[in-house]
Length: 286
Image 1: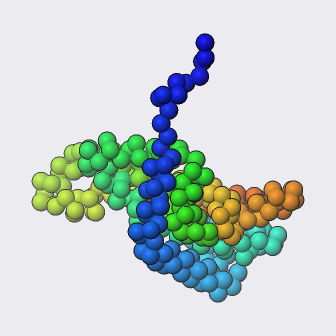
Image 2 (image 1 turned 90 degrees about the vertical axis):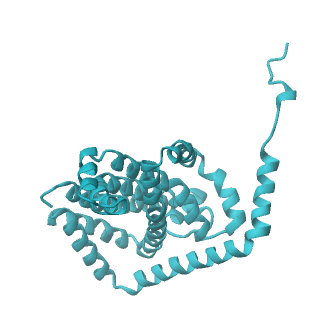
Image 3 (image 1 turned 120 degrees about the vertical axis):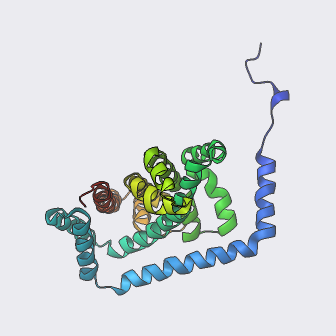
């Protein structure tokens, strides 16, 4: 007696998915190309702006930002030292490329994720329909959605940005939703009784109260964007992930370790800065 699954119940979704992607390429290829070109210009412009600044000025600006976030000059100096060490090992240019990619991807996550979280918080039907979509986005292996993204946008930085967006957006949307739903209902009711419109309540009361949770979501989004750096290098996006990939391909352990530690250092810097701002926003004395 066979223990295999019955052949009559087999049904593949591969053909419909392939037809859908083919239709997107045929019918919307020109529009997608325009989107791709715009994003590429944005990333290239940001990279050029970062390269135009002297390294010491960038480190100084980081130090000021880190101090402003945490009001701790020792931590600020430590974070500056981490990025200085990345330059010492010869990865400064790769660092700037990675920063540009992460900043653009994070900016898109903020533009999409926060309104998405607001929609989830205030529309129960949207919450029931869209929460499973967030689950899929966060758990689907990145190489699965890289296939259609590559077909739509080709190799390079743009598909890397979209792949990062799919993977890194859910935490920001979820934590924005959580923060807004945790706002005290009595505060909402008091604002409503005072004549505040829904938009005024959201902008002036609810979002500021939910900001610590939103900042935590932003922190997680940035960390997940950095975790996609190596995957992005596999599809033509240069940066620190490229050296990790080359180290794997050539069995150059030292090169891979250097680039890996540089990614860790960048993650620590961004994490401490965003956490500092999140803690200050959550402190009523700040």
